Image (spheres, rainbow, N blue to C red):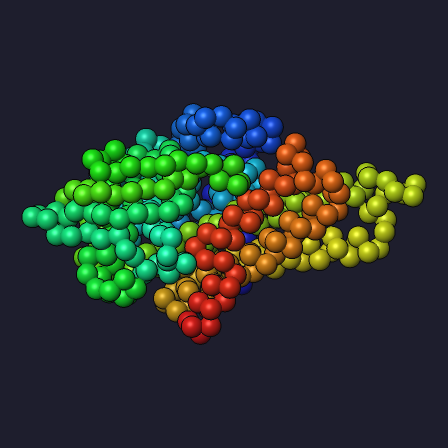
Length: 376
C-alpha cells in the first residue's frame, strides 16, 4: 500500500510547518494560554488566509478539495506545536456535520464562515451522566410550532468560550439512552436562554459548562432527520478521533526528539546518560510506541469512508493505541528528564498534559476497547 503524500499534501505540510515555526514557538504559546482570552484570533485569521481551514472541504463547498488526510497533516503539525486554536471543533466536527448532514442552504450559509475564519464553533454533546455514551441524553428538544425548544445541560464543551455557534445533541423522542430519538441542532451561543460558565482545562485550553433554558430554534436549525441523528454523531466523532490521533502522534514525536536530545547532553558519572543501555531501551520503546501510533493513525484516516463497522473498529483501535502510547511516552519523557520534566517552563509536561486530555476525549482506552469488541 502506498502511504506517500501527493505534491499538494506535501505543500500543505510545509506551509503549516513554516507558519508554526515562525509564529508558534513554545514560549509564545505559553504566554498566550495565560492571557484572559487564551488564544489568538489573529492566528486563526492566518490559518484561514493560508487555506488551512478550507483544506478538508470540497471545491463545491468553497474548500481546497481535500479530506481526512489533509486534516491529519494539519493536526499532526498542530500537535507538534501544541496549537490551542479550535481546529477540531470548528473544521473537523462542525464542518463535518454540515458536510455530511447539512442541507444545501445550511452549507451555503455556514461553511463559508468556517473557511474564512469568521465563525468559530463548539460541540455540545457530553453530559455528566453520559460516560462517553453519545446516546445518553437528558437534554431535550420539544416541538414548538414550526421550531423546537431546547432545555438541558452540557459539560466540558471544549472551545466554547471562543465560539459563536454550537452543535448541540438533544433528545426529541424515546428514552434517555435509546439510539432512536437523538437529534442534532445548530444553536447560536448568544441566543436567549443559553448561559455558560467558562474555565481553563489542564492542557492550557478553554471549555464551558452550558445550560439551555427554553432556547428557541427554528426548523432550519435541525441537521439531518429528526430523531435519526446518532449515526451521524458517531461518524463525525470518529472523524474527530482520527484528527486527535494525528495531533497525538505530533505530540509524541516532539517528546521523543526532546528526550533523545536531553539524554545526549545530560551527564552522569562523567558520561551522557544516553550511553546507558537501560535508558537506550526505554527510548527505543518510546520510538516503537510512536511508530505504532502513526500506523494506527494512518489506518483510521484511510478507513473513515468505509462501512460503519469498519470505521468504528479503526477509530476505536486507533484511540486505544493512542491512549496507551501517549501515556507511556509522556511518562517516560518526564522520567528521563528528571525533576525538570515536571516544570512549567519546559514543554515536556505540557505535551504530556495534552496527551492525557486527548485520551479522555470521545472515550478513553477502556471505553474504546469495549466499543471495538462490540463492533467486532
